Image (cartoon, rainbow, N blue to C red; front, side, top):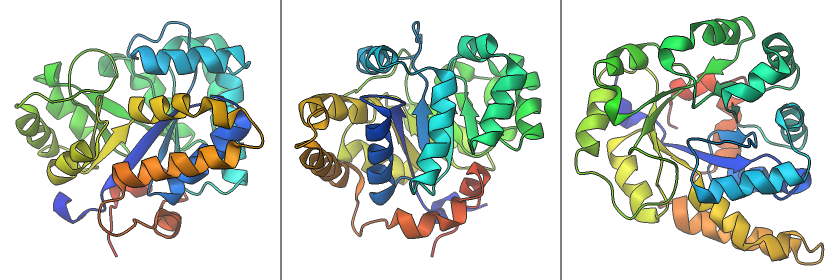
Length: 286
């Protein structure tokens, strides 16, 4: 398998309902326009252990707007109905899933066209039942692997679906200036065992970061930098007469951040990924 021939993945994270359902749809369409190959749709949660302050604030804003796990799943369908063609991965902590009830949760996921599931606080060793249900409902279970995974790396990588989320550093999410010099060796170790794209997340916030990880991995996940930009544009997004200007500024930010060389034309290329997030593993280039 020659991973350097794969189309590079740009997987942004946005919080469902921040600053509103309508704006979540607009933001997702802008992300798709500027090259997103899938979208992580975050479920706001009161105790987000893996999230830094930027995403925590987005979670608070979304919860104040009434967003919850059930509404976030329904929003997934609305995204597809409004023109989002790329896979949608629901990013949620485990407790909201338990509160909703696993059977209802998976039924809603299937009914509302959710392609993948990522639960950051569910250890791989405890995920077999959830992963089994994902298979039953044709939803990819997205795994995470960290530098501390050690002997577990091979096991996690060989069982990965859709793509494998490679955590660049320890701690919570957030923007970083630099990365540990051992990150490249870690990524190469993971790639040696993975049959799906290995994407890197946690701390990616600059064009230089994107360029770096496009060289050594199969793509990037960007969360805090995008959420921070959304936060900075809230005065425009929440004013109906200025919303369009806000979206234009957001798209300029995306172009500066991830449009390397020629525009990536995701709206056309993503036709191959409509069915579900498993299409990411094919990674075919034109």
